[in-house]
Amino acid sequence: MSTIHRTTLTPTKTQLLARWLPEQPWYRGTGAEEPVKAGGFRLDDPDGEVGMEFMAVTDTSGAHPVTYHVPLAYRGAPLADAPADALIGTLTHGVLGERWVYDGARDPLLLAQVTALLKGEAPAHAQSTDGALDPTVHARLDAGAAGAPEIVRVLEPGASAPGAAGEVTAEWRSADGSLVRGVFVRVPA
Image 1 (cartoon, helix red, strand yellow):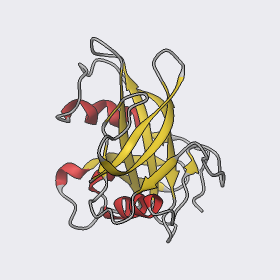
Image 2 (cartoon, rainbow, N blue to C red):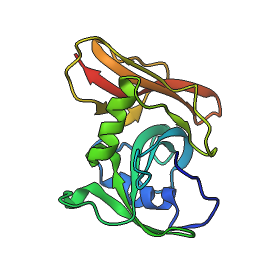
Image 3 (cartoon, rainbow, N blue to C red):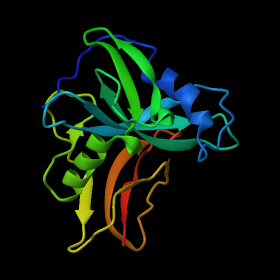
Image 4 (spheres, rainbow, N blue to C red):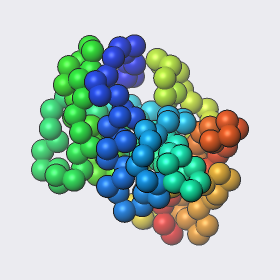
């Protein structure tokens, strides 16, 4: 079980994302504002080395608020053989020191743990509470599904994954403050 440290991060996660999000092809905003954390959950690294967070952040810089899903992998050293564009940035953790923050969609450990979650072999943990499971995260994988998990980047409330062989759904707070649910990960049929 991962430990959640109550400490400072420099820069913060949302400050890192404020620089990284506008460079992504699926980004819909203007980049004029820092995104706001809206929800998410965590998965554990079986070896206890890599932090894995599935963060929902809302950006209000465009014509309409958009909530993005950014899975983050926090590592104590650079990820060997990672493409340069997989690195979101580095930050200094008040307890753990320098951390390399990767786009989880490009991190093999995070993708393996998503697959374990889909198969019912790994539980989802609360985003900000040490040791607590997150019962609001639901994972489904159809028998015989063979596709690789795909990260859903733009979250849609109430959306399901039509024709998908599996999915992970979770909750987040919409821009108006209401609690909504949608698909974070889908497995194509």
